[in-house]
Amino acid sequence: MAEIFPFLSQTVFPIIIFVIMFGMGLALGLSDFRAILASPRAVLVGLSAQMLLLPLIAITLALVLPVGPEVAVGLIILAASPGGVTSNAITLAVRADVALAVSLTALSTLLVAVTLPLWTSFALHQFMGDMRAVAMPVGQTAMTLGLLTLLPVMLGMAVRAMAPAIAARGVEVGRRLSVVLILFMCLTTTGFNWHHLAGWRVLVESFGVCLALMLLAMIASHMLARAARLGPLQRLTIVIEVGVHNLAIALLASVTLIDMPAIARLPLAYGLLMISIPWLFVRWERRRGARAGDGRAGRSAREYMIRE
Image (cartoon, rainbow, N blue to C red; front, side, top):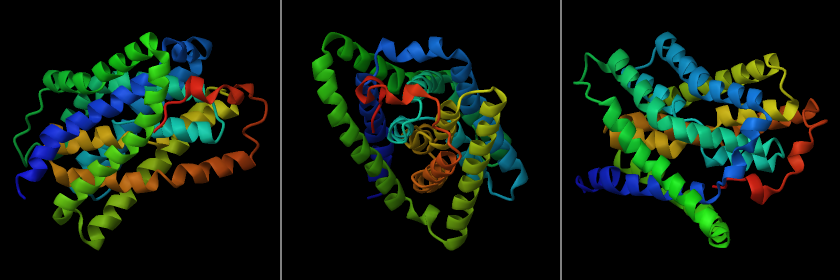
């Protein structure tokens, strides 16, 4: 039994990430990036919130809150894994700006191969430098992430360009398969590392810091979007993109790249929160009439959505 989880984390999990990212690529085309040219300010604000604001909030919480080094590192890894296909599904469901959501997810997926190793290396040195030999070559890790994220996305996009009908069917299969695979990663990580996760104190601490990260990030990104004078649906989309993270990438970084399963309790706790808290914000935003005056919500679901 002791050899099973290392095999899962070092061999099976990377394959899962490759499959999930390939499915995302099947749903992407060059036309999906038109929102970058159509609304460059919204894309810039959203990307800044994802790639800079989130990690900075996580670092602040890790320094201010009385948490252990593993929690601090896990919090920063979680913050450095933004977006994911779940956010696009939520954006479509609430009829926000799906084109903007797809563009942000695509761009963050391209950038995370470089930014995640940098933030993770910083977190390890800052919070665990005296506790373990920190060895995370940024270049090598970026190359590994690139092979597991950028390469399959590009392959998926190539399949869509050459065989759109096959890609369309593959998106439907990939959506269901992604849910199963991410659930498998969560359950196996929890099951084989329960000794790191059990206990009321651990659970309260994990959920507490994850809730603080989510709420602060969503509030701050909403304020940033308002300051940039974005429309209500663009603001709502950016808040969803910031509040919903890529659990698959966060788990990969925790249990595969740096081989510290204890850190995985942060993504696991966040996964339970992010299926509820963003919806509460959506209801609040709807009550404020955020959907008024934005005609972009009616665009075709199949044209823009990356489903999970």
